[in-house]
Image (tube, rainbow, N blue to C red; front, side, top):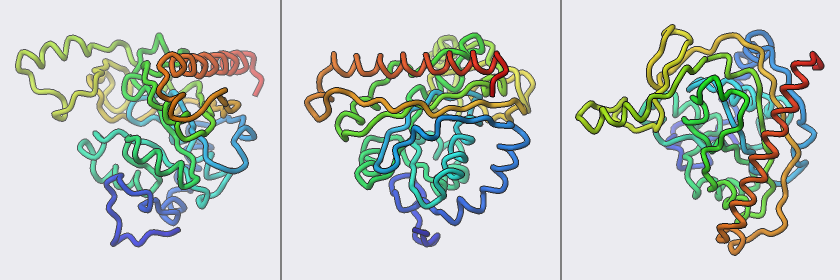
Length: 283
């Protein structure tokens, strides 16, 4: 469905603001980045369910640019076209930090990171992409580049259980080299904020990285960045289906924790195998 631009809310609270024609206009630029800048190597797309919704869960890298996330979305369009809907959950802070960029992301399929929007998309039969680790994941220190980090957030597990959909992990390797995070000094910055120092953007992103990257050289804080041209490897992993679904399962804390551990552990195993494959030179 092509949306009338004059009727767009573009605030992330409507599924109908996704605009396939706008996506088509961006595809040539994404293809250049995909083929020549990041030289993406991808695998596992046969693991995407042939029909019905799924919850795609990822751990991403590379600062606010998050190039592996964008390349994963481009691969979705390459494999399934722009008409098969997939929505990405985007942090509400983006509408404050960069409203024009947020509106453009909405046309690509971004919606507010809120259970209401995720449920609406899944019940419409669309798939949903979520990165539970958020800013803490995308800015995790370079020393943790080979670790899956979901920040202990289990809302995505409850969502999958309630809506009876499989979880499809998506992982990447290489994108962390596009921005090298040296350290996270969030505790210090939080203390300074308590002493009266105004917070960046008036927000609390729960992370304050020091990093090496473009265009700042040595950067401080969760600022926009230009990713370095590093090869990225992405993989869609085998779907995870749990033994029990429904509201009762989603309300069982021990069961939710066990499901979370299963997802995190499987993602780590798949990332480890991907790293081994890349190191061995097997494409």
